[in-house]
Amino acid sequence: MGKRIISTIPQVLGYTSISPEGKFKLKKTVLNYFGFNEVQILYLDTKDELLLTTNKLGEKLSVLPNNWLILPVSAREKLQFKSRTNICFIQRQNGVAIKRFEIAVKERKRPRIVDVESTFFVTRQIETFSETHELINELKNDQAKYNLKYAATSFWKGKKSFSSWKIRQLLNMAEETDEELLRELIQERLAKQSSNGSWDELATSTAKNLNELAQLGMTSNYPQIQTAIKWLLERSESPDNPGMFFLTDELVAEQQEVMKRRVKQTEGPKDRFRKRPRSELKLITAVDELYDNPCGQRIMWPNAIVLEALLEYGYEFNERVQTIIDTLTYGGWCECGYQHGPTGGRRTEPLSMKEIESFEKQVLYEFKHGGIHNFKLLMMQPTWSHLLRLSHKKKGELVEYSLRMPTHTQGC
Image (cartoon, rainbow, N blue to C red; front, side, top):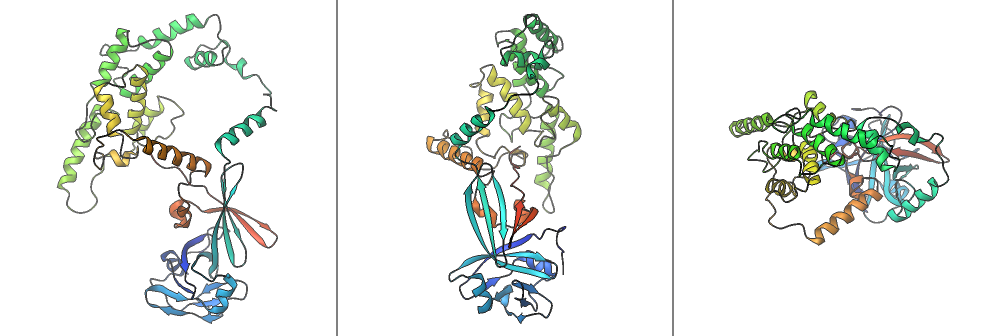
C-alpha cells in the first residue's frame, strides 16, 4: 500500500461518478494509495462496508482497460442508486472504502463544512451564513446584552501616540491637549521628510506619512505635501506594468533584467521576478504592523499603499493613477499575474453595471458560504482545495468529520 492514513483521521482520496451499471474509474490518488500505476487485481470486501482491497477477501472485481472497474449488483444495491451518481474513496488501513457521496446545504450561524459518514454514505454538509442583513441584526441583538469588564476608553487617555490621538477622535473623547498634540505629530513627521519630498527614499514610507498627515488635517495645498506627491509620481515605471509602483526603483530595473533573461531561455524553468526576501517584507510591515507576512510585496502592496495616499489627496484623475487603475482591471490583484506584466488584453471600456452587479453578487455569495465560490470545488481533489478532515466525533451510527475551510490565497 502506497500511503497510510493521515494520523487517525481517514481522508477522502477523491471522487468520481458511477453509472447505473456500476462502471466507474479509479482516481489517480486511489491508485497512488495502493501503490499502483494502473489497476491490478482488486477485491471487494462487503463484510462491514464496501472495501476495495488487495487482500484476497470478498469478490474479485472485473477490471477494464484504462483503470475502469465494475461494481457488482449486490454492492450497487447497498449504495441505493438507479441513475448516475457520485461516489467517493476513503482511506482505510487495509484498503479504500467506497461510499455514495452527496452534498447538502443548510443555513446556520457560521460557515462550516462537515462530512457525515455512515456505512455506505457520505453527506458533505455545507453550513452557510444566513442572509447578510439578518446576520447583522442578529449580531447587534446578541452584543446588546454584553458590557465590557474594563473601560477600553481609559487605556487611550493621556497617551501621545498618533494611534491614541486618532482613536480618541473616533470615539469622540478628545482631550484638551489634543490640539497641541496634533501640531506636535505633524511637526514630528515633517521633520523627517527629505528635501526631495520623500521619507526614507521609499514609496511605502512616503505614502504612510502622507496618509497620516491627511488624517492630521493637512491637504494638498501644503508645499510639503505637493513635494511628496511629486516625488511619488516620479518613481520609475516598468514598460511591462504601465503606471504601477514598485517597492523600489531598483526593482524596476531588476524586473527588466529578468524579462531579458526569460526571452533567451528556451528550455527548463524560466527566471521569475517574484521573490519574497525578508528585508522587503519588513518594508511593508513597517507601514502597519498588521500587515504581517505580506504576499506580493514587490508590486501589489506598494500599489495599494501608494494609491490610498494619492486618492486621499484627490489625485484620482491624475494620468498615472488612471493608468494604474486601468492596468489593475485584469490580473486578479495577484503578483504572480503581474510579475512579468499582466496577461490578457487591456480594457477599452469601464466595467458595465452588469459586470459590477455580477461581482457584488459573487462576493456576497462567497461571504455567505465561507469563501466557497463554487460547490463543484468540493468535488475536487481534497488536498488541492485544502478540504482536509481535521477532527471527528461519533454520533450513534454516524461519524461526523469537520473539514478545513477553504483558504483565501488570492490576490495579494
